[in-house]
Length: 432
Image (cartoon, rainbow, N blue to C red; front, side):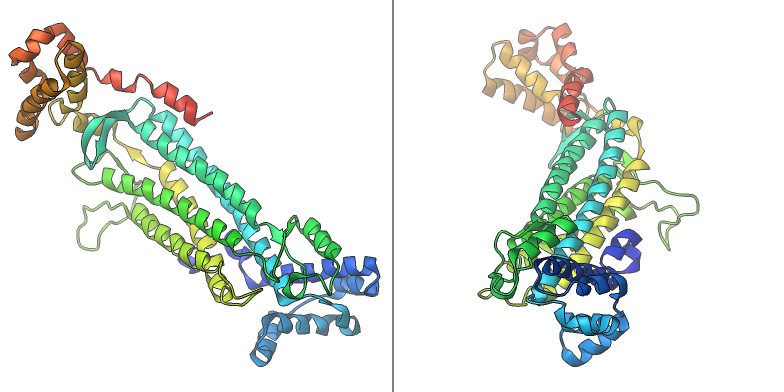
């Protein structure tokens, strides 16, 4: 977490103040239920609500001596409530507090990321519809393939992020669990109803079975989902980076007044946001492998996962939050050049129509192998001319083509509208 790539709302979730507030709430709720069960005095939850407090500097001071963060926290709280502190944390373990709080922070983060995703989807939907009929060339292997529309390009990315949103909602549900089960998760020192009470009050679910810790496959699912979303971000911005290349120039990031692209070359307008997002996506994905490796813990628990999660929890969530917000702004302000798209589409002398010619020849009775050879021979001549010759003109002069297709039928093939005739059907599937 560095300020450059951090937004305040997400940063607040991972601030020590929020973590310790959650810890205090867990302890207080547990005491409320234990008081109801009669295992501790009624005064304990009351004094916790009225006087319970902690001091972060004091916690740090105590931890330097005891080398245990939860004990340091409990000691700080005890100093605020006095004698009743002996009943706080009764029958509980550090994992009951830490794991439940971590689940809460991940859930809070997921809620914010869901909002980010919804905002991004709104921007993509708007720009997709705006350019539904903006025709451009589709590329495979970086080479001209057949016509598509810029709106369809964006619609594909919309669909990917929509899937990502559904996965994120599922991952949120997966991680929103609570454990208050005591040492090795047997409830030997605490009633299971305490866990149920704490979970309900915090909007979580009791863990099905906790071996003192919440199973880390839940966390692995969560971070893997963030990694997939990050890959979807990179997939989109790599497209934008390509389209902004000088020799392509079909779209580009907004370049504000006074902005400078290079310290050496005043003409430069670089895709810096897209490149930045490519890097941020790598950072988010870097959390996935450690999260997967955290699943395998020794016996009922160890803390090999702890140091990992103290890093990847805030870092992955903060970075993805920033990246999604940045990408939304990029899409909102993306400059699109339809005229350049049309120019690039026509650049190679109609080669994009080669499949339609091939199909028309086979429909006219020529074998696929022979038809392919006819079209490819003419197409290569256009290719080698760099588009100075046109496929239509060469085919008109080809006797094998003339025998199968008259000039009117051949001319009808070279129609860009044919390629976007089903755009509405595709849009209806994407934007239901």
